[in-house]
Picture 1 (cartoon, rainbow, N blue to C red):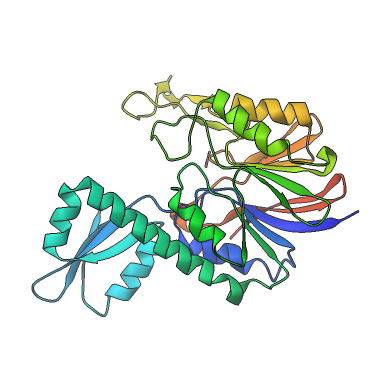
Picture 2 (tube, rainbow, N blue to C red):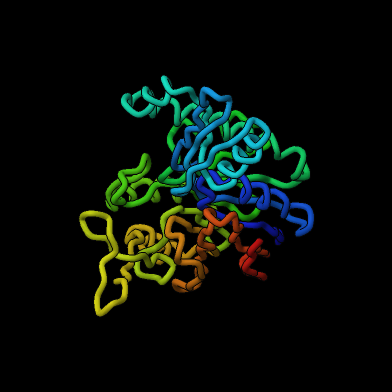
Length: 315
């Protein structure tokens, strides 16, 4: 039997601080692998506007900053650690970003790709060569990210395929989710998701030692609970409390109950950190607090057909 120890995290959403913490865990924990199930990229470009007097103006989390040239590097780092992409512009380019959506989208994707390349360049310094780094894009990650991951020799790309973790444990992967209110790049109907999942699962040779890494959690399992939103994306309240509903995938739940793999890894719903069993299968979601720069992860040890260790990690 093969024993494997790995750290599983998800939904970093562009926070460089969380990414660095994630990589830094490889050595002290003696890991065999680092695994992320998706949503690695950030959500927004933060313009840093040059001023006639040589200073810079920018707004981050509703706070306006006026910066000197000496203060700029620390501010840029603060923006990156918050999960956004800082971008120094003059007033003319700011106007173009504000008025030309196509140009804004192109700029956003260019910054996203550049940042991902910089992130991956940190791996050789922080992660021993023997440690596998498995990155699976999620519903918020544009398709441009896939090529960056594929082209890096230190990273194993996971999307709609099966990966060999240690010679015994295989990982079936999918970053697609059911529809969200935000119309993200990788979402589809639950029926279409079922086809994607079955296509990946069909490549697994042995199910009792298999791992499913599906970004979307199984429906109605406590690790898929979120606040219900109205048509204006505002929380729905009842008797003074927000209404909590399951928002996971029925297809994900179906294939887990049908095939009963050893372990399943999920994310997507940041507030639903925890674990649950569906039959013999242990299903986990570490949740996410990327906006606070906090790494939330699970340290997992699997040995043959058993999950020997499951430990929540926060840093």
